[in-house]
Every structure is written in C-alpha cells, then in structure tokens.
Image 1 (cartoon, one colour):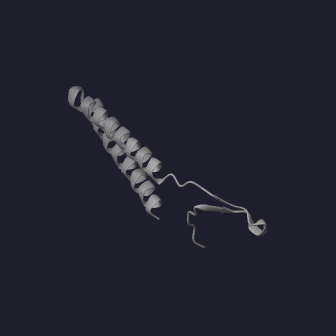
Image 2 (tube, one colour):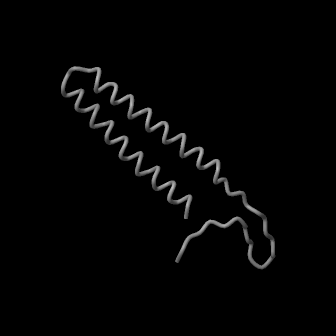
Image 3 (cartoon, rainbow, N blue to C red):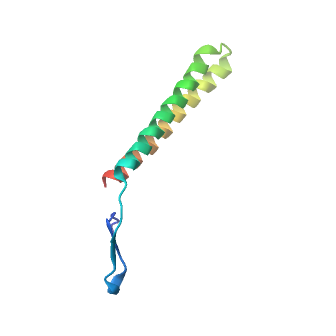
Length: 85
C-alpha cells in the first residue's frame, strides 16, 4: 500500500471536492530554518569546546556538537526526502 499526498479532498459519493493547499514552499522554508538552528547549536557547542580548557568539558562539548549535527542531518534529510516523494 503506497501513501501519496493529494491536492484534493474527496468525500466519497456526494461528489464534494475541495482543493487542498499543499504548502511545499513554506515547508521548505521551515526545514531551512531548522537546518540553520541545528548549525547554530553545533557552532555554539564547538565554540564552548574551543574556549574551555578543562578536558572533560571540552570532550563533552565536542561530542555533543557531533551528536547534534548528526541527528539534525538525519532529520533534515528525512524531511526533504518526504517532501520529494
């Protein structure tokens, strides 16, 4: 069973059809904003890792930056893939 986005809403036998908006451009803007937020958070973590000289804090901040970047990239990639489907 495949799932696809349609631009019409069909209420069966009554023949009532209403065009439904498909906000693809707005969704892409939201994904771009989310990507910018992930990038900013990663940059902040890396800044902390560069500034703090205490080694456990430095390693933790760098690891957290990598984790944030990887999870964000996975979510963004999935969202873009779903938009193109």
